[in-house]
Amino acid sequence: MELAEILFLAFASIAVVTAIFTVISRSPVISALFLVINFGALSGLYLLLSAQFLSVVQVIVYAGAIMVLFLFVLMLLRPEKEDKYFVVNRKMKIFAVIVGLFLFGQLAFAIFASDIGQTVSIESSRSEQIGKIAYIGENLYTTYLFPFEAIAFVLLVATIGAIVISKKKLD
Amino acid sequence: MLENYIPIFIVFTFAMVFALLTVFSSEIIGPKRPSKEKLSPYESGMKPIGTAEERVSIKYYLVAMLFIIFDLEVIFIYPWAVKFKELYHGSAVTPAIGLPVFVSMLIFLVVFELGFLYAYKKGAFRWD
Image 1 (spheres, rainbow over the protein chains, first blue to last red):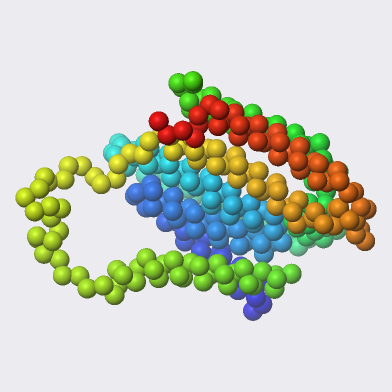
Image 2: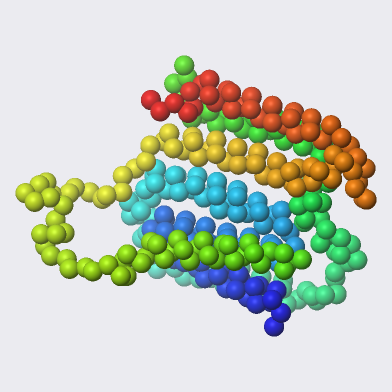
């Protein structure tokens, strides 16, 4: 096997296992921590798809900032005390299994019905370049300069909005 | 291309192994001889009520939210820092742009720091 294949199998299996643990663990905080590992494995998968920028963003923004926010929400609300959400009745279980199987069938059909390798266009060779950080840097600060500066304003609005909403007593 | 990332993989693996080792080594190596007296919180003290996990204050939430926004700022500086030299001096594929590359980032940061200034003036970082 090639290095890329070994890495893919490693990252994919970590992603699947941690995703299962995220769903089945009773404590929401533990489940959120498994999600962090899952994001790490996904970042590795992005790297294998030569989407380096996305891979870095996945680690810095998702595993770093968003998960901190998730954990604070979980620690703030303490959802494990809400016992009523953990009660599973029989009807719900049957319905959940049916819906799960339906979704699984849909995904399996989508994967196996598509002829992989046949529908890849010539343009996809360019996609290897697009994910690179250098490519993004080359275009974002020249061709897409105006959207880039607009992002600053969008995030400025987000900052002000976050403060106005959460700080009730403004002085 | 993938070979360039092997050092990063090694660093990540080393960091992860080191972190897990430091956390769990004391758990594994350390001797444990628990007794009823040792496990009680205080001798002739109060019995604990409820869980040890307290609810955290909502103030942390605001800090986390501001952290996300400033984290995104870092994300946008990153490709700029990677490509700055080539955009400034020019390369085989890109013409030299010069000072505007620097100024564009400066405008971005100034607009951003307006938000920081607002947060500071409104006392978002004050812990009252």
